[in-house]
Image (tube, rainbow, N blue to C red; front, top):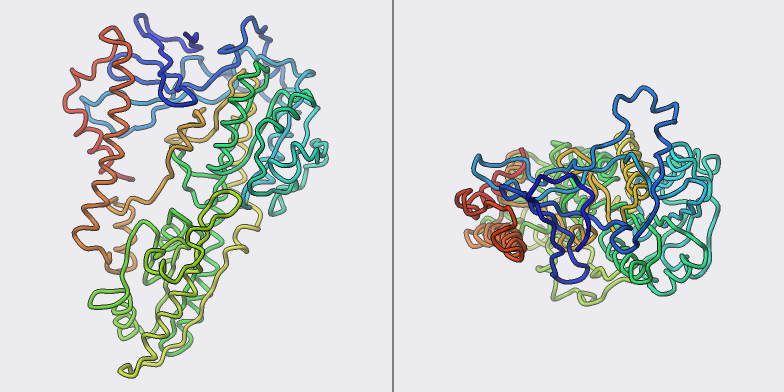
Length: 526
């Protein structure tokens, strides 16, 4: 049984729940308290020495009243609860610890970026390098070039605060990136051969899955190596965390494309501007950009089905809006409407090197459908349609001020966790507090827009578009959301049952828990 690093109340017990691989490391307390803890080097290496944290002698931190977070501090996943609700799932709070498991002069760190581009990549790289150097005195830092395959291709560059000083002002990643190329044994062999003991992996859910496999192999070999993930996805579709870096920048940049489409549409009779934004499976960029713009007449996202023909369909709405206003702007996420174009999409079952399904350009398809509709013999209206696809322009820009600050916090949280001996985790804010989250929690599902939530209702109110949903669609969406909530609750119950009656949990005394969880979900975003 693993020793817990947290200060738990008397009677609390920790169990390692044998569910899948990797095994969750969970701590159960009173009143339905569950800590989904992250692995620690001491879980599989005994007798590791500890050292005083160098931050206590760092002049920059001399004005801080409390240098270190309390060992028992945790962050609640749900903050909207009922008075009889169980305390629910928590994650270990991020931040510097009083004792560290690495001597600064013996740290050999590396950083790798994988997957697609995203604003803020260079900022995260810069802040990891500068944070390690200035906060902990670490000077041996390598950059792995070209994604995962760079480990065994032996493409590396030495990173210093001087060499990364201005990279946050540039888009892309100075290390280069790639999709795929994951050979676990070769990667870990290279880590071991080079004497690397801290690995910082920046990437999306696919990259984090790869990081999890790397951690498992490192643990199997018994290596003293911390593996830390920094979640990156411009679509904001990583589960658990509040948002991913680059998202704010993407929404801000999307405004430029929407504004251009609006100017074009407004400047000509029956003008239509169609803007395609990123969002393979999740429509957060399209939704937030639409809400921020206020110039959009219709927003289409993957989570919300729509239909084209017939009364109440999209084409009928376009016709009515043109009749009323003389122009309109349509924003469509790249993953929207894929079911409608499946028959014509020959690449439907093809995947890229990261395992992502290749999609047809829904923007071009939708633009052509609108043109065909108004060019039919029974239509007397002539339209002028302009299609704008700013996807790669948005991905390639430097991060804005908000994302730069956020990237700094992510990088520092990652460093503190690695120095404290934690491993096999990713970092991110949960309800505004940065936390350490097990890899499996951010890779088990994707974060998606809940179309029965108030945020989507706000969008519909802003655009005055119909939902394009029938009663069955709404019921299905609600059922999916409720099923997900119930699955989480059931998993928690099953985990508790492994410890029997002595686990210290009080679910049975806390009322109807399934209703509480569903009520929390339906409360949605404020």
